[in-house]
Structure formats: C-alpha cells, structure tokens
Length: 89
Image (cartoon, rainbow, N blue to C red; front, top):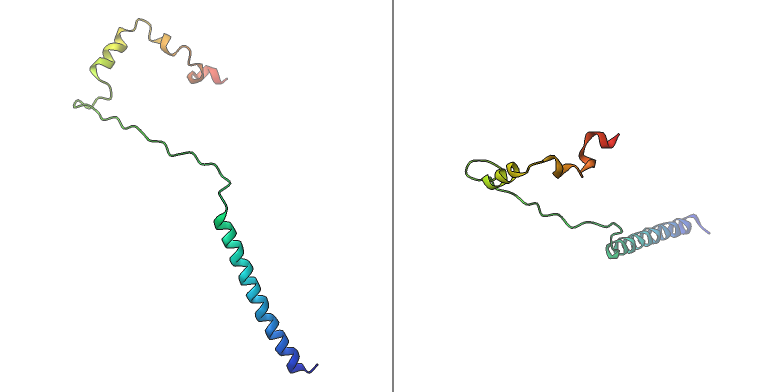
C-alpha cells in the first residue's frame, strides 16, 4: 500500500472517529435530559411573617395578659426537656 493511500485512510478514519464520538456524546446528553433526578427535594416552605402592632411589640396585650394569668408558667415548658441545658448531658 502506498504511503499516500495510507494517509488518505488515516484521514478518513480520523474524521469518522470524530463523527462517531460527536454522535455518542449527543446520545449521552439526550439520555441525561430525559432522566428524572435521583434526588428528592422538599417543597419550599412558606414563612409566616407577623407584623408588629402599632406599639412595635411582637405580642398583643391579650397575649401578655394570658401569660400573666398562668399560675405556674414553668409547667408549660416542663415537658420540653430537649430544650433544657441539662437534658443534653
């Protein structure tokens, strides 16, 4: 086989290999686009925004009156051991 003919085959095969690689890459990208994500995402949470009253207080007068009316406020949080500093030790 003459050297010029071999070079011609090399050139043609190189072009063919590049075309095959481009085609294979296009198939990979098409397959990736069609796949569903394998991660689970939570829906975004809606945050409630409390507006402060005209006095700038976060609590209403009724809230404060209710809190003062409780005879033993500690009893409200006695079951919330996971918030107490001693519970984590």
